[in-house]
Length: 232
Image (cartoon, rainbow, N blue to C red; front, side, top):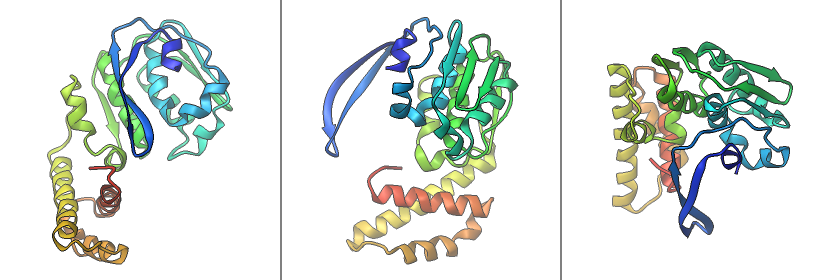
């Protein structure tokens, strides 16, 4: 709804139910976005989507104002402050407010952005690279694997040019293989693996990771999500 207010050309298709919840596919067509004052009544409905909305605001003509979003300060990071610093890096004018952000749309440049381990910030600046005049390097991105394990592949399929170090790619592959081993063990034995067994399994395989603590934690989280049917 917020993107529609900004002039986005969106259409919901293939309405259906999944997990007792209504879902649909979104068709998106090119459109010129304009800055808006986001109605505060809409803020609670999309609190986790604001990093992406801030990037949309950077691409829009004019000013976008978001208020009433104090909750963004107590997410995986202070998303108001972290997004503002990232926008500063890539040359987008903005003003930090106690409960939101004021963004002036304009050209997006390149630079080095620190996501502070916040997966939504990292993915949002990856999307911003589509409009950037120079490469954007995003640091501390390991947590993207916890919420969207297939993000890199999906992003590349729609035209993003993402590159990571060879070490990062090898580490991701090892993590995915370990998660798959546990999943296969449950399927074959038809017995749920206990949380204690999961911890012991990843502890025993900790040496396979380059950045042991982060990779260990991410692998365990990915496995937990997979058990619930959320991925990877």
